Image (cartoon, rainbow over the protein chains, first blue to last red):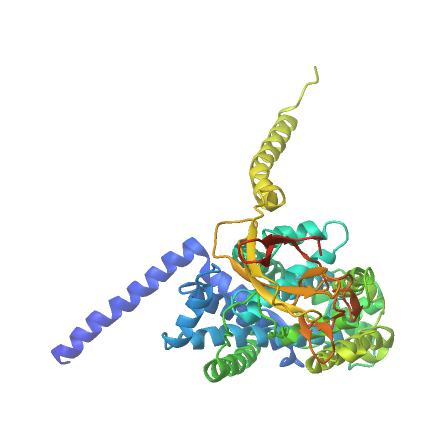
Length: 403
Length: 166
């Protein structure tokens, strides 16, 4: 053996040993290995697993928003006097400024779409039935929080678009019965949109809503792990001649042992599962990569728009809402005179939001196959169709329909 | 006097202490949050200018730099003030804030009406809502018209507030 080889073995072995010893010191104190195993070796339903990537994609996109949002905070100044200038500086003088703003904007657009798909998937597979009612409710709360973040985000650039969005959005709340005027006053920090409106909206967008969002994400993921991924009806087929025995056999191995009724026993445990790692994690990562690529490219190519500075004296500016608020905007066009505005906005839209939140208690169908619960599927699809139809009307800004 | 077990005492003490912490923090927090409802409002008179040249029967936008009513001092916001002179000598000083969603209303020459671009609200020359979703007429800016003897002109002054809430 040459001297150099001898040296390498003498140096190499103790380094590996020492690394191992360091990790076991760390592991003994933190339980890192056990935590990692618990995180990675969750059993997930085997079939349809590409459809189950939407939840993790939502999480990745939210984290991307937090990440790009923190970067924007480095340069953005939330005051009516320097807001527009700081964004104009990003656009004209910072080579990466408009790209990062673009990532934040297109990330938000993609996030809203992906949450919509995630909710649609969960709805079609009726994953929110016992014992996962609170999974749905925490998810619906997350959806509303993301919409709140999207609209407050659109209010922050003090350009024409942001300013007039701020005027309209803060004005909507004053139609709320009884306390509406006070709410508008509090949000605006005065009768009209002014310096306090911007700082308040900024605080809501950057602290209040993200804090709530992260809290509810924690609850949502905790509940997911507690009850396990449901998947969809396709994971619960029976193949033997004696389905009851087959299901009984599955339920015996499932935890927790909640099911009592036959239909609940059927959907208690999937027929076949895979480990989350690496099967599901691979698909999750691929889907997230695809979405991040889209955002990356759109952010680079399209960036984020910045209008002329806010002008409260304009006579020619036509405020248009962001696309995800087009249905609501068109709804405002169609709502006739006072006092029905309040009724329209807060009974129909608020009622719809409440129905979405409480869906697990409204859907009393017993089976989970879409074909066996048309009484739930048909009305919801109708509402989805109406919302999309209203958005299409909103794009064309059809005033002529108003009375 | 009622006797407490050790456990009851600890529970009561924990509950009262936690409640006291909550109350102590809530008083300034809620007061701060609600302060725009009570804080001082500063209304000022702003001279818009002479209005004798404004054509009769044609709503004409003039502009006023209005300081904010509440909040930290900032640059005044310029707002449009629609002056409508009638043949009978009366004058209206309309805001261009739509009573529906507060978008920027403008006088449309073709329609001979005020049009809101957001949701198609329509108002007649006196600001009365005549079409679309607006629930009430355009409010007027609080104003006064004075006669300046030196120049022989009627001068419009407005306040940074509306004559009725919308």
